[in-house]
Amino acid sequence: MGIVSMVNNGADMLGSQFFITLGGNLDYLDDKHTIFGQVTEGLDTLEKLNEQICDEQNRPYRDIRSVLKHYLNHAF
Image 1 (spheres, rainbow, N blue to C red):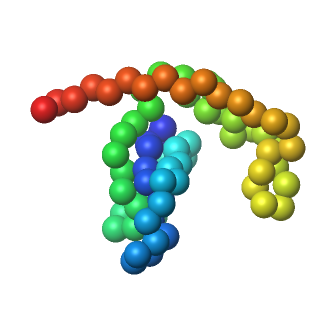
Image 2: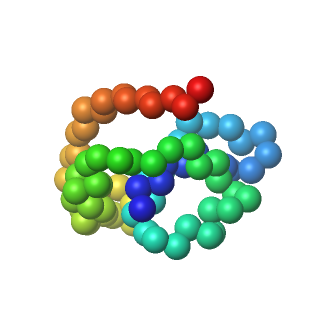
Image 3: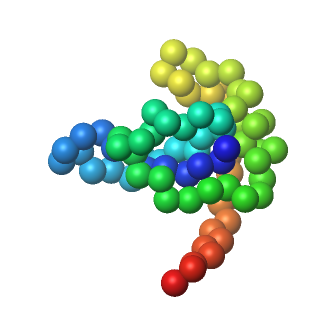
C-alpha cells in the first residue's frame, strides 16, 4: 500500500506521469511499470484523495491543490 510508480505507456512513450497505489495486490504492476518508492507517511491524505468523486475523464469535480514535500532517503 502506498507504492509510488512511474507510468509506462510503451516503447518511445516517455513522460513524467506517476501514480500511487492504495490496493494490496500489486502483481499487475510486475514487468509493466517501474516502482521506485513507497509512501511512509500521509496515507490518510491519499485515502481522502481516493474518495473524491470524478467525471468520465477521471478528473475530480472538486479543485484539489497540493503542497508537495520532497523527502529522499538514500541507502547509497
